[in-house]
Image (tube, rainbow, N blue to C red):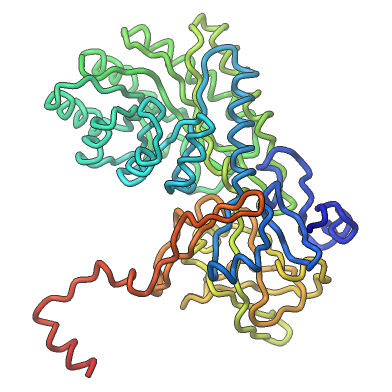
Length: 473
């Protein structure tokens, strides 16, 4: 039996005072720190998807990614339903699967009738194996290999062309295969957002997309290639964005280019305005809701089309982080502790930068909870450190937690996006397992790597075999 998240011991006042929140302050998943199903059990344990998180660690090991199916589906449904409500034409939401691409995630998204945005041959193969139909697959990337382009052609997906090299390579491959390839052209709109330097992709100084001064030449070239069918245009201005105006501005720019493409006789009927809506990583974050974001984009595109006399295109949005970011948590076990008098106390967990490289890469900030003592007073200001041989391997610089002991369970919220997908084997640490939880049941969706997995692809030349054998004796 569990208590609801607004019970006295997890009240808003208590949680606000201790720099964390369990209460679902919004039905929009991206506006909450934890999955929508988060509760506290009578044993004071965190429960997600009806599953006791500390008990999940005992069953599946630590660290562990815990993905809540209901929260993921709710985000998919809100995007899909809002597009249908606010956009008067045809629409499609596609999941930017670089956030977390695996068979189970792609299958859930596909069941919700969303498409999938992939950026590599591996992501494309996963989506295909998960059953995603080709007309809902969009292949992005700024440097697809010839093999990946060929894979895209064979799958029948839409290929989002990023540059001249790719455009000309695709023409040759299409001619050799004697196939007509559906493509979209990615443009760089010159719109900046207030976000991290490495995740701003819409400004002119970017590795992505054709620049505006090239685009008419591109239109003319594509119009002369009968085996390249240009179905539409694409742009993306960044991620973890809380502002709405840049997305409205993007609509006006893209509709202008859509009109220009039609003047070249291109069969443009799709407009992909990207994604980028942010999520709550801490209680200070205040992103717009999914519905508000969709309403802003849909109305801006419809208005721009009316103003410029352009038929309504099929409107495509491609959220990633805001679909899955807050649907998952990462659970760890506490190990060693070290107090530097007058400076800080380090509390080490059994993971770190290998399962979440975002803090050391982007200086990203997260919130942590003691999952096996949810109502304990948050008396300790600690630095939550990882186990890797790097001084910068810090999960959270300032984590407010109860007094902790070895084997206590720490949960870091908001780890559904870019944690599993960016995980590594740094220090030859096996990557964690992942479970999908719903209605009290947990299903393994990613197996934990073993030590043997780490050497599975190593090769030892014959000239070294004797030495290696002698050293081991």
